[in-house]
Structures are given as structure tokens and as C-alpha cells.
Length: 243
Image 1 (spheres, rainbow, N blue to C red):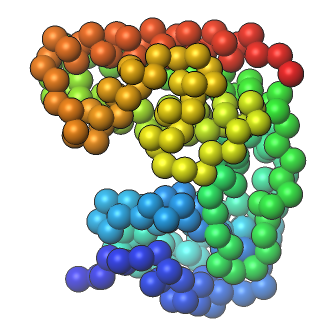
Image 2 (image 1 turned 90 degrees about the vertical axis):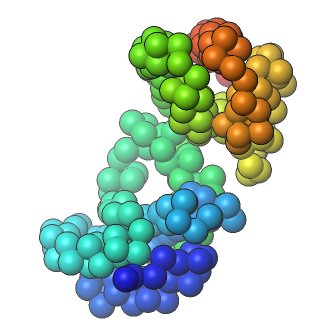
């Protein structure tokens, strides 16, 4: 059975060697991002995410990586994000939130630092944050109804949705001049303070996500309804944000 890494750095040499052998000079960079780069990797629970930047010529031979991807999937390494410099540069206005979050915690393990000087425009980032908040608000309402008010699905809804919102919260804090590299709790606390949200609601949500609080179904329903109301208010504030 393939061994699951205890630490991201345990596989750097082998991973880099495999992809260097495959792509050679057509591979411009390998970049670790996400929880592994933040120092929050948990074996068997967290993913080890890599961005691999290829030349246009290298991208033409992407199919040659099928067996290599399969090898690393056996060790719970997801399919890397394969991009070219041209794609990144031309997509910053379309996906500013995604590139912001990748850039917020990363480590170059081979080649160029492609991310260091990416020009992410505040207007583009604000617009995508608004879009994502409103889309996830609709999904939150729909998912709440699908739980049928049952405790376990409500707890699952909180745990899964809160992680998705934190990625948006970090960008919203950046728009207010706050650089948050800390863990989820610090981000949640800061977003409540800076955007005037109900800190108690988000602390309760965080405690439920971590399993430190296990309220009954009636309290869970009340908490989720307050959650929905807070996200609605936040999306309105982001819509009205002016630089």
C-alpha cells in the first residue's frame, strides 16, 4: 500500500523529480499551496495541493502525466492544478479570488515564483467576492431546507459551508487592508469585527464545526437562520463597498 505523507515536505524531492523527468525545461514551477503551505496539514485528512506551471509546449503533452497523476493519487495527492503563465496572466480579472487564496499561502518547491507579483485588482476581487457570497447564500438557504431540520445534517451544513465562506472572508479582509494568515478562528473573529457582524453567531458556528459545541436540533435551526441572516447582511455591505 502506498504511504500517505506525514508532512508535505516528505514528498518534495520525489514529486519534483517525477515531474522534472516528465516535463524537463517545459516545467517552469511547482508550487505548494493551501493547508500544507499554511502549516495546517493533517495526515489522512488534509490535501497536499500543488500548482504546476508549464510552458505552452509542455501543456500540449499534458496527457503524458496520466500515469504519474495516478501514482500520486494512491498516496492521497490530488491532481495538481496545471496552468501556463499566459493563462494565469489573462485570468486574473476572471478568477481573482482563486488566485488571491492560492497566493495567500504558498511555497515554491521548484523553479520560478510565478505568484509573487500577480496584480490582483481590488475592484475585480470585490466583484467576485460579492458574486460568491450571493451564490453561496442561495445554496445555504436551499441546503437548510434540505436538512429537514434534522440535527446531523444541520451540523454537516455548518461544517462544510463555513470552510467555503472563510476563503471569501480572507479576501474581504484584504480589501479592508487586513492581511490574515492565521487560522480559521482568527479570520472569523476579524470578519465579524471589521464588517460589523454578530461575533457570537460566528463563534457558535466555529465551535459547532470543531465539535466543541453540540446543540440540539432546535438551537441548530436557530443558529443556521441567524447564519443566513448574517451572510445576507455581509453580501449587502460588499455590494455597497466603495474604494
